Image (cartoon, rainbow, N blue to C red; front, side, top):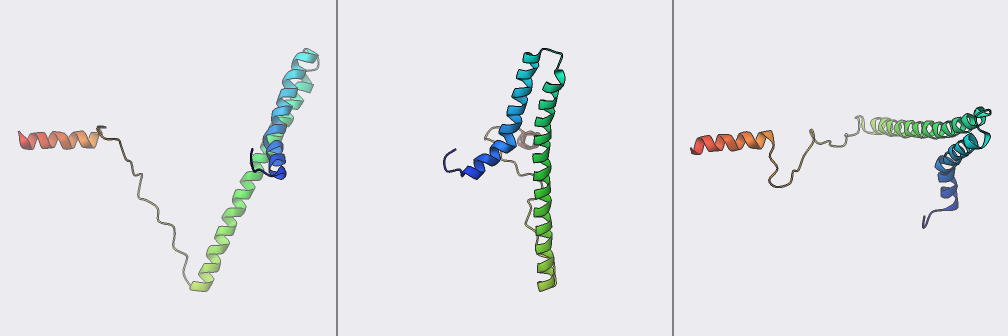
Length: 119
């Protein structure tokens, strides 16, 4: 990964590399100990799931912090201006752009009504 700092690489390893290694170790130990010590394999896989879960919960927590910061900025704007900040304009519904020649129920109905009026 060109241009990525050592800290970024370590973070990626902690998020994804460590759980992958734990799962791999669990699979290898499953075949090495052959059945009688199944707890070792399951423990390693469970540790991988725990590390992944911690990463997910941490990211959810960060998203909540971002939302709180946005709400605090809105409240500061309200205190300063006496009104809530304007919301970002959202398009009404989805705007689809279809390639030329694709038939939709609406275009088919329009074609039929044109044929009736012409004929």
